[in-house]
Image 1 (cartoon, rainbow, N blue to C red):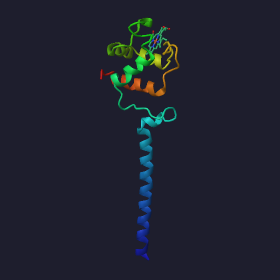
Image 2 (cartoon, helix red, strand yellow):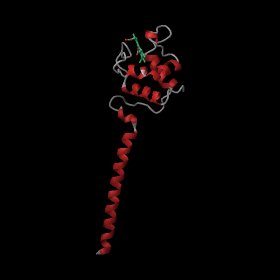
Image 3 (spheres, rainbow, N blue to C red):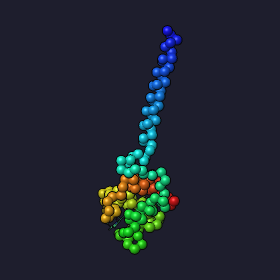
Image 4 (tube, rainbow, N blue to C red):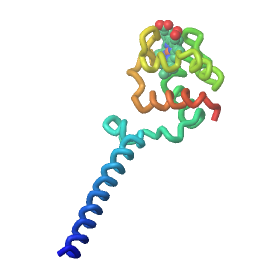
Length: 133
Ligand code: HEC
């Protein structure tokens, strides 16, 4: 009778360990994957390979340069070079205007707010020290 019960206890312990492992695996995964945070809004949001030339410059060219470029510089602001954008990042203006924070004019001036994915990319780049990459 004693020898019959040992395998049963071992089996139960293994099942508990498996369940605990599965629960841990699921919870750590969902918090590490930033893409999932935006799943409802956009199919995918690549916040891993954010660079100035590949991500930030094209984004600003599309949404901002019309009014903040060589031909038109509203408020004296231009976003054509890394140096210009870095300066705006340092003063807090870049994140202030795109997030429509109080005290900043909401940008883009004549378009809806940028999507959460784009705003997050700019935040990530600013937090990374605004590299010229
Ligand atoms: C349709 C034209 C237009 C577009 C597009 C536009 N802006 Fe502006 N921007 C303006 C105007 C006009 C002002 C001056 C508004 C004011 O001072 O109230 C301004 C002001 C600013 C300022 C100065 C803010 C301050 O604190 O004085 C910044 C920084 C700025 N824009 C950044 C951007 C960025 C970044 C984008 C793109 C995401 C953008 N703008 C898109 C017209 C535009």
